Length: 426
Image (cartoon, rainbow, N blue to C red):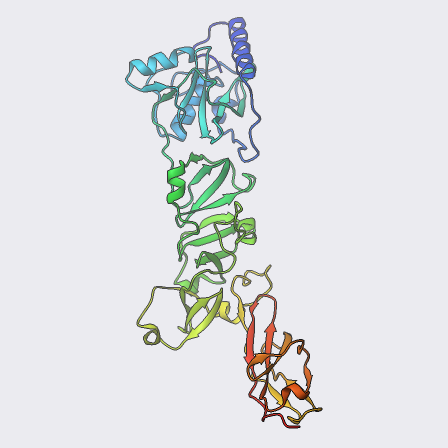
């Protein structure tokens, strides 16, 4: 924590204790669960007694200065231009022309004139910073915590890490962590599956400029199921074989939870749809059949000429079409199925006092739920919602039809109307 040169065990312990107490008095805040740090300090320095050797930058091992020099090297790709006790870092850096101010930034050095330095891992929207440090309390060990951004004496900007929005980058906004995929932020609920990663803070302006959902054609892989998906209409469509899309593609790894919770408007999960939105086109492989997605279902298109010429499209598998409408927990469950009806018929005599019966025909799939609505001259008849209908005086001279609506979980509803009867007689 303390120095780049040994100044005596007694003095070191006393100053270390003072620095730790100063931080605690300033308002130590427990690190949020999203920030579970990783101590990757090289074992050649970590596995030997503290202050028993120098690191590559002339700092004593297992001290705060050595840890920060290592972090600057490993994460910022910057090599320390000097070695000095922690309290001297600010003045020395400033003398060399580096910016030293009170504005935190990811990758900056948090510096205390009371003899401590730490590496800034994240700048949080609530005016706190998450730091990684060594040797708090003179223990020569790694620590990570979140403290008010006003606590350090200042921040040294040797070579800060700019917030990146490329595929795979991690960004923080409004206290949450996201991973970038196809220009959109996908929520990261925990570091447990990923290991600790550098996180950049997105400004309100940067956040507003991001896509709501990933661009079509973005490839995703889920952990821990290791399933591959391609984004279509903001939703993940399953890739059963890379051959379907012409071979392996670069993927962004996200959580299974992000896929399962997609489509929750107004929540942190809203940046993936569960079903495709809009009306994108897809081409099924290997059949090369064209489909237009509407309400999350694939509707056949005869050819490109029928829709005014070739349109931007995404290639998916024929298996996606064949298995559309699968259970929501299935990887194929992100496309609605399309019910295939037959036109219903009506049996019975079109005469007052006689009962008409709706014959729905055969539907595909067969296990659908049917509802009925009888109509008189095209107008719905009040309370006439059974499969049969008793003709009465109000029907005299009218043509009777029946409208059948079929529903099935994860399928689009289908509505068909029968041909009309003869005019009802007395």
